[in-house]
Length: 101
Image (cartoon, rainbow, N blue to C red; front, side):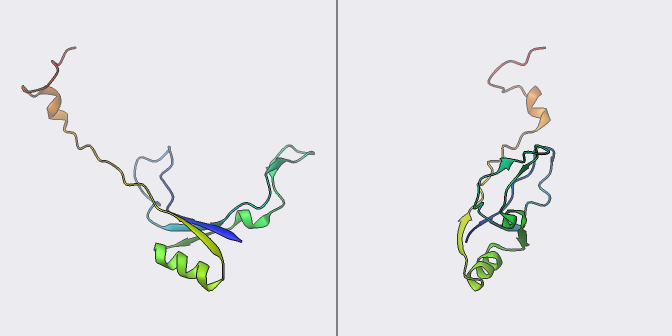
């Protein structure tokens, strides 16, 4: 069984970075998801797809996977490029483009 170890990104509904500092271990899907004929819900026969284990550090997740004999793939998080902006810069006299309204 192959598992993925990653740090989740923030959702589109979040403005902050809460709940993104922990690491998640989840199983790779073994079967394709398909709509159920009776109700039309999407499902799969693989129940391990429902399991998500959370760890405080990447090393703890890797140690768990190695202890259980699992093959794992670690996906490193991308670093954010912060562009620090100040509202007062909109009105500074040395702007590249004139401010108009």
